[in-house]
Image 1 (cartoon, one colour):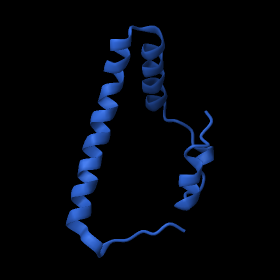
Image 2 (image 1 turned 180 degrees about the vertical axis):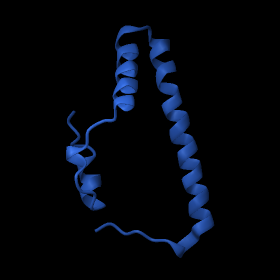
Image 3 (image 1 turned 30 degrees about the vertical axis):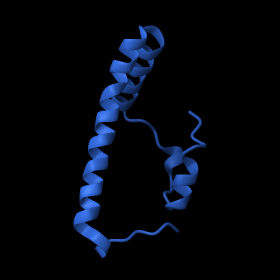
Image 4 (image 1 turned 135 degrees about the horizontal axis):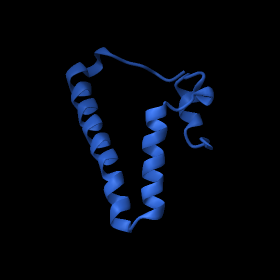
Length: 80
């Protein structure tokens, strides 16, 4: 999979070895299933299979905002 869109993020934050990362079997099964549904089933089923991802992103984002408010300026991580 071409990851040119995410490589600058890894470089900016000094994350090494990401190019050599291999997907876990569960991740590969889940993403393969989603891809199969999106490409072979009706539009509504494709949306339904993707919806949990957006719920998770929303929840994680809310938790991150809450944590940022709680920690304030006590924790900083600047890019390299």
